[in-house]
Amino acid sequence: MSHGFRMLRGRVTLGLMAAGLLGLPSTVAAQSATQAKAVQATVAGPTVLGITLPGTTTVLADTGPLSRGATDALEASSVEGSVPSLLSADSLHATVIGLPDEAASEASLGSLGMSVAGHRIWVDFIMAEALAVAGAGGSGDSEIDGLSINGVRVPVTGDPNQTVPIVGGVVILNEQQTGAGGAVVNALHVIVTGVADVVVASATAATP
Image (cartoon, rainbow, N blue to C red; front, side, top):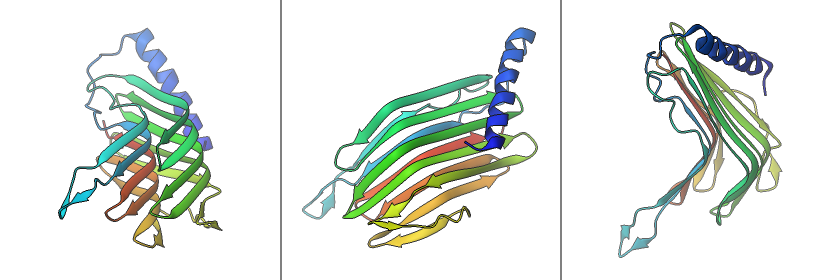
């Protein structure tokens, strides 16, 4: 976890305590888009007589959206989790925290092993974090340690939206969308056209 985000979490936690002690108004700006997920995996459905049937989506360690108009904190975690025939991981965790003037989210997991369309992807540890501050917009970052694809170590630059081509698709590292409305950060996004779309460590923060 980055030093900056640890400081943020401590500051926001103290703010939540103060809100309860000082009786801050319960109605604050809407933050319904602030949420975090360790994994969201969509697998395409089978094709029958030229028609592709609906696929299935599995979500692991999902906080759900932060309640509208509330100073709140949500958390979801699991010792281990898996999507059969696709991926497994351990220490899955997601958290969101909201205050009247800022919102933060974080998602992380370890020992990710994924096999999709013949591609083998491994990550030792992965984390995404997003922050949205009223008047300043959104920002975010991610951490990816020990990434390998098909047995080959992949250097992670840390730059937003680093892409690694694979046969039939692409792997996007530190995928980011930021602006005045907030930030969306997906630490790892694997897309194999017509097969699967997998997001690992996703953090979203909406500007209050």
